[in-house]
Amino acid sequence: MNHIVLYKPQIPPNTGNIVRTCAGTDAHLHLIFPLGFSLEDKMLKRAGLDYWNELKVTSHKSLKSFLEYAKGGHLHLVTKFAHQTYTDVDYSDTEEDHYFIFGKETTGLPEKFMRENEENCIRIPMDDTHIRSLNLSNTVSIIVYEALRQQNFQHMDLTKHYDKDKLD
Image 1 (cartoon, rainbow, N blue to C red):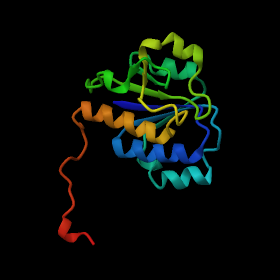
Image 2 (spheres, helix red, strand yellow):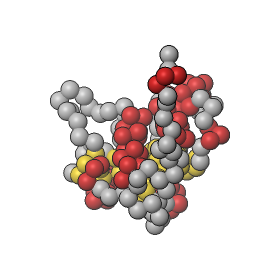
Image 3 (cartoon, rainbow, N blue to C red):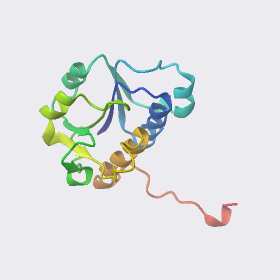
C-alpha cells in the first residue's frame, strides 16, 4: 500500500488537496502533529471537499511514534537535498508498504532525520535557480502517481473513458 505522510503540515489548502489525492489513489494519509491548523479548519475542509469519509487517515503525535508505526515498511523521504530522483527507486512491490514522507512547507523534514536516512531520500528534479521548492500538494501527486505507474495502477479503474460525443 502507498502511504502519504505529512510531517507537521502548515497550510490547510495543501492538506485538503492531498486528502483528495489520497482518496482518489487509495493512499493512506498520515498526519504527524503538531499541525499548523485545526482539522476543523474551513479551508482544509473546503479543499478536501467531501472526501474525508473516503479516506484512510492516521494521526501520530510525533515523528518517533510514526516511525514505530511504520516499522517494516519502506520509507521514502521526499526532499530537494536527495542524491537520487524519485524515478530511481523501485516501488513496484505492491505487497510492501511504501511510506512517502513529506516535510513542513516552510522547513521540510528535520535535517538529522534526513542524514540518518540519506539512502531513503528522493527528490523531484527542478530548476532551483528560479524557485526554492514545488508546492506540497503537487509534489505528493507526482510521487504517488509514479508509484502507482510502477505498480501498474493496481486497484485503479483504467477502463473509464469519456464519450466525446456527449461532451459539451
